[in-house]
Length: 319
Image 1 (cartoon, helix red, strand yellow):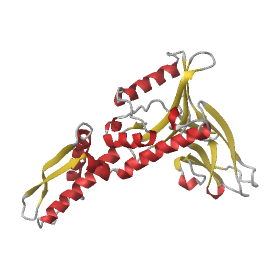
Image 2 (tube, one colour):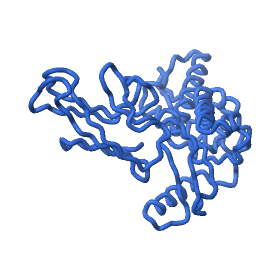
Image 3 (tube, rainbow, N blue to C red):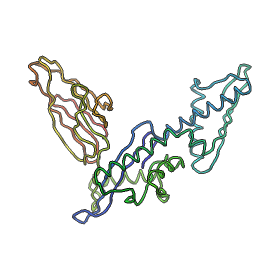
Image 4 (cartoon, rainbow, N blue to C red):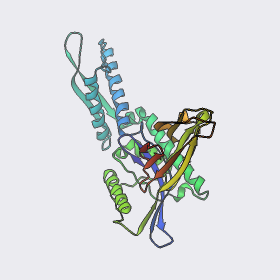
């Protein structure tokens, strides 16, 4: 599992020897979220709790004060929320104290003073940790789909990557799924840098003797009529990969062809993430199926997606 600043990903990886005797690292399954489930999201939940708790404290003594609309004050609270989160990665409780966070109706500065412990952190971030656990379970189910003989007992090590995995609430969520204590001898931040360096060395040819079979975690698709996401590269596609398709007009006299590059698991285009959109103007509109736009889709050695259309349009992103 990899919990970063704004993302969460999990991959189930098998290591061993390939047919030629070289080391083989194969991704069996992967799942995750690119936004809404990283460290900054935990900070926001903590900040929301701190503000609500302090406002209730003020109300209890007859002061009707709020700081949620004060941009400067909320920046201070968010910074303190992150500091509190880090502190609770190494101890059971901490305290958030911010002097002069709000001036009351008499012109007197009021302070924020809120105690926070691990139990409370777990309660206020349940929405996030539940999603982390759900993603881990989905990855296991995907691994079972690929290999029906696969079971949870086949997982020998749980390696955590990314600074957010230092948090006990994240570790607990992951442990609840895999039933194993995550390894503590791997530095979460160093693992990210080491993985990137190894990948770069493999792609550039500076490292040999190891072969990596990696896969994409979401379908790559194109939007077609009736809100259909027509899959170009399905989830689990091993990269590098390349495919060329031709988009055609569906109506007589159609003046433009719409190219929408999608990423997601849904069969409905509207429920997928649109990575890019492009309208190709048809120079000579004709009968249905008469006009076409040739589009080439590529996943390079790093899993980076690029799309090039015959009319000169191009897109480069991440898969």
